[in-house]
Amino acid sequence: MKRFVVSLRGAKDKHGVAAASLQEFNEKAIKQLDVDPMQGPIALVLAEDGTIVEDEDYFLCLPEDTEFVLLTGNKKWSPCMTDGGTMWMARESIDQDDVDGSLEIPRWKVLAAQLKQNLSNIILFSESDFQALIDVQTEELSREIAIPVVKAEMLKDTLQCLLDRRQEERQSKELLQLYLKAVNKDGTDASTDETDSKRLSQRESDQKTQLSSHVITILREKTSPYLSLSNEQLEAVCAQDTNALSVDLNQSLEHVRNLQASCAEQLQQRYEQVQRLNSLSSASQAKRQLLP
Image 1: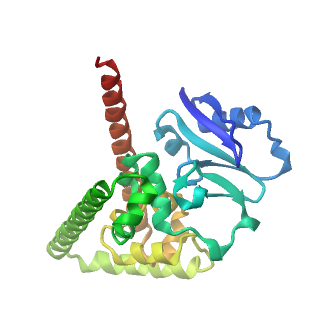
Image 2: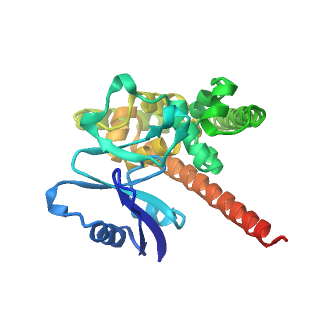
Image 3: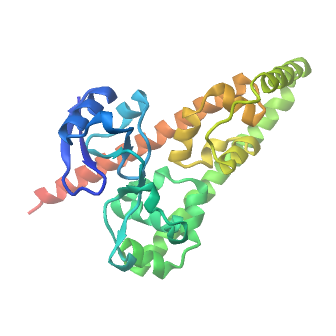
């Protein structure tokens, strides 16, 4: 049984809930917040980034004291900014009708808010997230995260190193896969996969996934796409229907199953890294408190 924190959209009050399963947590959260489940749809999202939590395995992988927001009706998660954009509050949900596309918050500010809340969130960023922060002026990044300019410059250098490392890792895997494909090339199997893919496309042409065109392009064109996706995008890929995703990508079912398994593995590795960093941070803070 794990401890979690839950609140309603826009509410300051937070409630602690202990649960051993996603269903138990949902039931307790609804009761604690005095929400009537008959008044409309209810969604449970991470307060950190708005990820909808519906999968039991994903829920069990979350660390203790993870904060959730309970959304009701047509309400939607969104980051909240106050004090002229220099101080970030905890994220909250807002009504979908209240969202104004002309006032959309830049992606880099959302990422900066996540880093300000917990620096270990950097592990969950995609390559495009890294690039978005690297392209920001150092002074702006310094103000947004509330750190000295020198440290902001060091942070950008770290992001560049991580970006280079991921790109090198992806390129190495792509070269290895191309080599193995050349060595083990089997025309019969390739022809069979192509035929299966065409039949599947004709049979299920009416099925569509909920993924954006950007994610679909990455999944189609990159040999190791999971290295280029954020944790939210990885979660979305894992949640898609295998048949529908096979149609969108024009790939065989076996290929899509392997792709979703790789995305799930990458997501798990990132969250495990975050948990390890959080544990090290907690141990370091405890040690400092014990020092005279």
